[in-house]
Image (cartoon, rainbow, N blue to C red; front, side):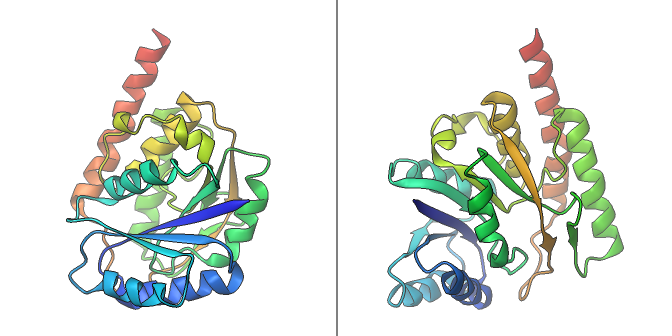
Length: 239
């Protein structure tokens, strides 16, 4: 089986070389595609230098930063065309998603269509988060669960493994989020729209190693609006 990890980056030059090395140490045969949104800190140049040593490392350079969701949609729409790929993993570059869970994802996806690395299932959690951020994340996920009607616990999780065939059936045009709410919309359309068999594994989410958090007021606003829109889609679908 062939699997690929998608890692979106923006100003992650100090983190990307660490996470790439950790992944290949554990899974030397896996493919990694870094999606860089024209990082001014030279992240893409670091990746290019790493590509000289790692034949399974690839780079997708985008001309400008238009959001996490756009980066993933761009990469996924390209990757699903490769019929040799079996599963697609999404993860962050900043070290918050530990590569130690990758083999568990690959084992569990054999019986499921979507495997989610969850902070909010039994034995999951976060490390070194401020109190306000823990409450914001908890509330946001409960809020998304209420309006989407899906029986999962971590809607904003970005650490996932997805069958390529499932993504091949997805119309990316129906996902309107360009930012982090893409994670919520993607899960909704895969599970509610395509009937994906989802499974959550517990993970410990760590604080980023280097750089600044990209959480913003716009991201929070989108996180409020998107579940409401999905709720209206549910009502329309029932009608």
